Length: 196
Image (cartoon, rainbow, N blue to C red):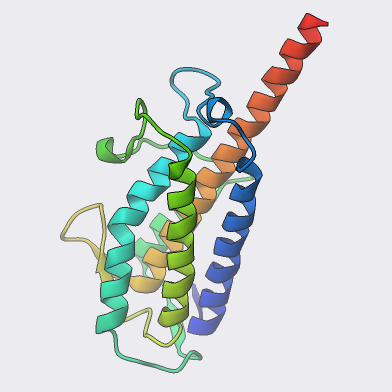
């Protein structure tokens, strides 16, 4: 994948703004609704967001450090994705609208955590930081600047690819949280229908 820094950054900014808009649909839900699960093995809305917060805690400081250390370039500089970075970013993209099921790292799995709506506020704050970092990244070489990953301390990927991975991953799990909301609303509707 090849495009200018500017085109990549604009796409990622749009995706992040859309995420902020999508999570606003959860603001009026009760704590019980935010923690509702369709079954014990699935995640609640808050667990989906907490999973993303944990990724943000890892990656956001690394983005900041990479940007600070990067050489400045024109926003029209080409970004060329690396094959491994592109592979991991594309793994996060739904296939035919369906989210591929994957195992998560143990310390990134929020199952069983005691979560409050503060999780939502934290996610929102992290997305505002992402917007700020993307603005700063507009003038750095996203192909030559690298950052380490959770995969291994030995695997470093292009900054542009890791931004793509994190933001696509955010989209994946906010979409999952939206599916939880739909399943909960359907369940509540069915219960009301049975009671009448």
